[in-house]
Image (cartoon, rainbow, N blue to C red; front, side):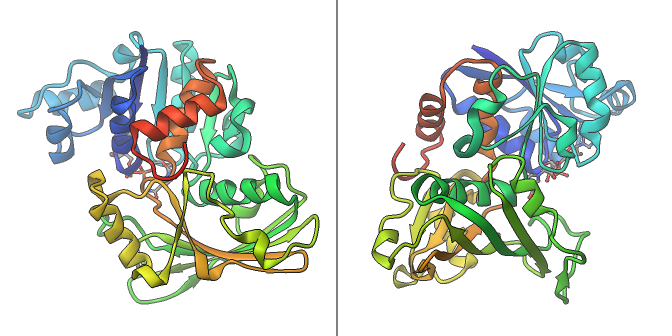
Length: 337
Ligand code: NAD
């Protein structure tokens, strides 16, 4: 069994913890929390709790919730750490992981230069093979990498252009906005295009991003220039063989991110998660060497399966197909796997 520590138990950390727990070949040795709040109390039903440092340990000691020790103590007993602390914190934590000689996975909020490789399961699983420090790219980059890598495989892609309509913040956050405005990314391209190039070999990737007042998913309007001309018929069942991408249709009532998030709940997913990238069938349009489609991204959960596969790649446990298959079966991810 691979023993995993989860450092940072927020939006991403709590989901990765549950996903690790669902796998047959790994277990959660403990989670690291900074404060003894309601999230820590609920987590203590399933996980051993550790405090982030001595100061934080004191706040647990003064509460009704006991922490078993500090992050550094937990690390002595694990094979790998998934760092899901807020962006910027990973850069500080890597020194602790290095001193303890432990492998660690960082999230998309950290700079690419922090890790030896950036990771996407479909795009570049082998690049993280045996590596000590890896970054799972952001929710937006993960979603782009999944569908674009399929198009690279099938047709070859010369150029990626995309408009990213971003959710303002996550549903459990009452501090960030905008709540009544539309906020464009200033400067071109937005950071997403260059980030995509850290996991896919593509010549050009240009993106712009616009933040809108919603917490329910991002939407990407994608426009690819392919290596060769294709016809509309070539796009039938484009993503059928890829479990982490699902085709959805307005004909089934799935006309917006509201229904997609409702679908996650109806599928019985914990927290209503949608690990798959939904692509609207009606939006797929091919003309000469141009392919367009619109996809949605559940920002809170699409990176979760990638964290699991990154663990197996870094520990040289399973090849790409085997790992993706096992992850998908354990998380009941739809489609072929
Ligand atoms: P979050 O704020 O929801 O969770 C972070 C957690 O870490 C919080 O519980 C916080 O209290 C805790 N924390 C803060 N400092 C800590 C420390 N020193 N030690 C241990 N815990 C500490 O953040 P998140 O949304 O889960 O983001 C985490 C990372 O994942 C970031 O790099 C982010 O960019 C990336 N990411 C976020 C999303 C998303 O949409 N939320 C999607 C993909 C990737």
